[in-house]
Image (cartoon, rainbow, N blue to C red; front, side):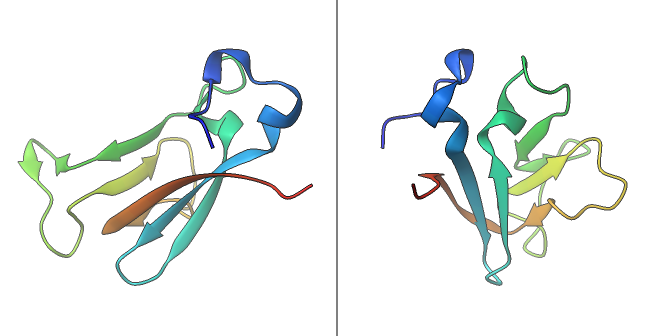
Amino acid sequence: MPPARLDSLRGHGLAQYVMVEARDHYRVVLAIVEFADDFTSRRVILTRAADGQPLGWEQGPWRVVVDDELRPREWVRQVTARRLRAAPE
């Protein structure tokens, strides 16, 4: 699958999603529109640091943070993979 084009999402492109997987097998699915500025103002952040320091073993090496959630259901620590997929037809 080619990379997502966030600047021209429409039609079948809207059926794409990103699967984020963690070391402990926790998984989260984010719709592709959650990354597109013309669909949402929320920010999905993939980071390796907090407060200017690298994430420790219990949080890192990578972490996903979603800035507007009241409960952090889409936050993922210890990220091991990010996969772009398309929903089946």
